[in-house]
Length: 463
Ligand code: UDP
Ligand code: UDP
Image (cartoon, rainbow, N blue to C red):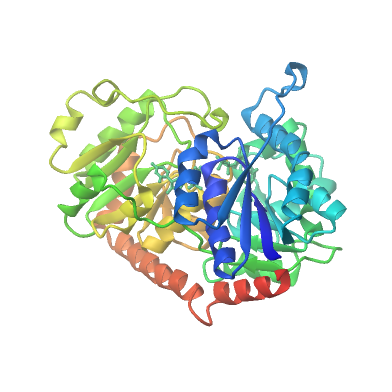
């Protein structure tokens, strides 16, 4: 019988894409892989492409029961966690049917899908956690239940007071993820249940690498994030990022081909980032005044909190209406605005790109790091403010725009940070650091590299 691993990602491209990269690693080890997907509607094109490219990679849809109206919580985030919890009730028969023709070696689950740990235990299967974000963010979440038991104050009531986690640069309370701000919130409670399960996994796979986050990796190895309990083995096997090749050449790649080397500032804000109409105008003005070349992915303005757009199809933006009058015409020789979506990995790999303004989502961060470009952080939602603290204060790979945590980032600030990175001495220092880290990212997966070694170790245990 063939040997198989079953992977169970959470919803959202930021969770699915690194899990599929992990699947490819297992395939290379000669293991069959089945990926269980919940609500694949928004990811259908991605799944179709991955299946076509890897015929031995199987995707299985997990049925979701519709939530009864009275149990339906208001926040999109809690609804997402609830949907996953309900879906997990259906994975036991799926795994049992897979076991009829294969020997299932392990179940690997996203950190939002930890209910599956109980299923694995019932079936007597080893169960591994896959954490698609930073080791630093994992260290924080692992320690959160301990912190929770020693205080009764919510982060939201502590302003910018530094919160101390083992192995992590102090994080201002205001920079903890949105759903974790209020300990009485349903999102906080649901996350705590997931985080409390972390120590019970057989091992933790993290999409990061040692030389990127030495402090957190050491703390995890030393077990200091988990006082009084044994720490499961952690395997930092990153960076796992999607391949940059797309079949058709996007107009923005053709445009980049005609720009000078390292001259273009690329602005792109993840799968969910969007801004108010006022912010779009400020950003445009700042870019125009900077005099720098730019490639900017613009979405239609939204007024609601981006954290509640879960997931969200993008309405076509009317660029003439939302950008300042005459902006597109005045900047046409040095700027390109792309509607809603750009092939980010391919863009970042292009030699014309000289800086990346990012929302600090972890996939975007790794993609920027691997491309060796200096980062300008503009965190928006999820754990991105924590990532910004890591990138700016801890490891010095980014500078951040001021005002991301206020109502508006002013045009002057956009101009100042773009100029600083592209024109100043400090900016060229940042560029050198970025280039060095890109080399280290490559080394991590070479023979003798830390991620390769961690992967070999993990596979040995799983097989
Ligand atoms: N992405 C892209 N084009 C876009 C916006 C996003 O290709 O216009 C990709 C990006 O390369 C990354 C992913 O979408 O792989 C976003 O993941 P991340 O973890 O950075 O942010 P999230 O979407 O989870 O907030
Ligand atoms: N989140 C969290 N801790 C983390 C990562 C995410 O609490 O380490 C929360 C975050 O606040 C957000 C939600 O989980 O509201 C969804 O996370 P993410 O943005 O990564 O999901 P995606 O958009 O990629 O599906």
